[in-house]
Image 1 (cartoon, rainbow, N blue to C red):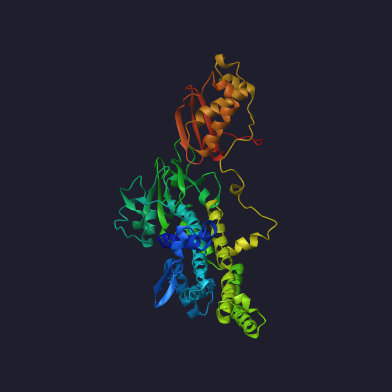
Image 2: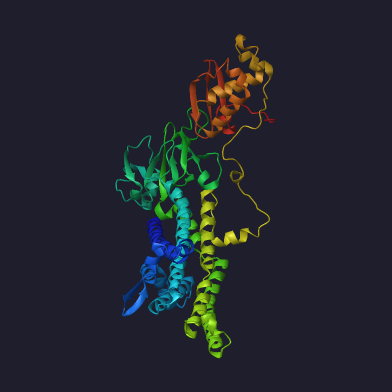
Length: 538
């Protein structure tokens, strides 16, 4: 799709630039030179020469303008004729039909005027300039479509290009299927031998087992078999906090593995299932969806369908266009007949069309009506607005199920948010700090040289020293808070390096400060693993 859009963009850009290269000198010859140069100027004298062609005496200026207009009309404007032809075959009269009719009528009128050596040859300018402006609009529309598709490109970039495929006794064939799922589920990387192979994502199929390392993009949708990991799912949910995934949980391709670790590094009350995943240091996932079946591909397809789907307002514009074209053609014919009748009956003075026949003079008004009535904005504005609207939304993480959503949004006066990630900054921050331990307990931990440090500041210093070794987003928020709260203290007592540091995936971290002060930071599950008693007030 992107290659097709690039080809269309380059084709429309090339057509506009060539038409502009022809229209600019035409405008200069017919509009600019007569206004700024005197009749005695050599350029005007050159353009005013008479040339014998087609057994007629023709004006050189008219011949030059004709030669410049013809490529613009039939080469640059070929797309209008092609679209009009296919549209008429389907019974659809769109804007291109009106452009083709108007410019062709203008071109033919100017050509006949040139052969008759009349001033009407200046209508070549109308034909060339109109085609140039419409091509400019189509080029801008193509650019809007391509910019919109860049949002899809960014989504597709989230998908990993390669994966670490696990070759096991249950999976010795590169084309495994879900029939082997039961055997794979019984596989244990701590007991069963296996080999690894880095393969392109195209070689990954449902039923394969892939290895997930810290910081890597999950290559495909799947189910966690062994190990634990925290996953950044903000691309799907908008939530900035990584989610803990344990064996049996689903993971989505394109999400980022923030952490992989152990479940029993500190000991604790683990069941037999959890003990199978001790010290894996990586996670293993059985693939359930890849390629078009993955959630990421379905999101991309959703945006593409939203861009291409007709909305009520666009259907209205198309229906108006299908009626508008024949109406304009009819009005142009009526205009010609009315003026011709007035000329023949003598209502229009002969001085008005002196040197021209009544038919030629009346045809001028019919063509003017046809050309001026080209409502290019009607055919371009609605699809361009849909493309740009859905594209901007996708770049900001707002995916729309259809273009009609944009139309309905203009009437909305209440918005309901079902996820906090939609409303937050996307980065966790510490907002409140409450200490529940007594002053005496903390003072007993402090060295005599630190006795002058406030208890709260010392506690924050311990937290910052420990969490500085973790890459979890909550740890980063705690360190940032500590740096701001005890900035004055850090000048004389910088953070120290803890010993015996252990981080448990999705639960917390612990370590020793100065080799004797045990510090642990985590959630309730982490506290229970350390057999810590949490009071009801906490």
